[in-house]
Length: 176
Image (cartoon, rainbow, N blue to C red; front, top):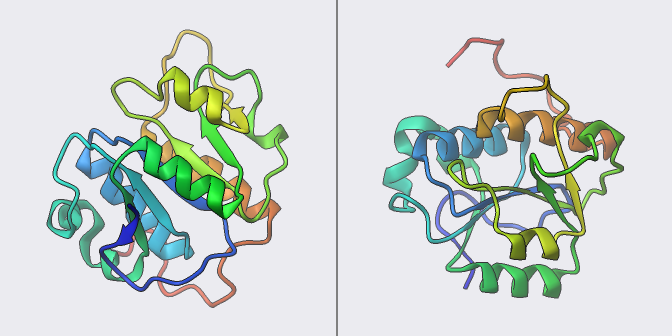
């Protein structure tokens, strides 16, 4: 079942990020930091390739984990039950799509799913997705780092839905 384990928990009317069975804690921590800074709820679908706990994310997420709402789902099945109950679209980022993410029309209640670093998302996830998008890139290269890919697609989704935080920036680029 889903449950928050870090940060404040509230209802979101913003794009969300979901990580399907993440393999690399540093990527997950970086994505959680991104979610904290942009006010985006994060969902983690287990099992993960590392312990899913505050401690496991501290190195990459630093002190930002206290500012992100994280919802854990013990399985794909529990995530799907939550998603269907919430009535939200699942948008899968995948190298197996022909639809470039800038050409897709995002909605404020979409869930952007990132697959595993080692294997992407299984066929069942592809079939359940309401849409699949890809990042246009040069031929002959496999993929972009998961955290970088999440940043690109989330940025476009927030731009389209006017979902960026409205406050003044707290720090300049490169500040820790």
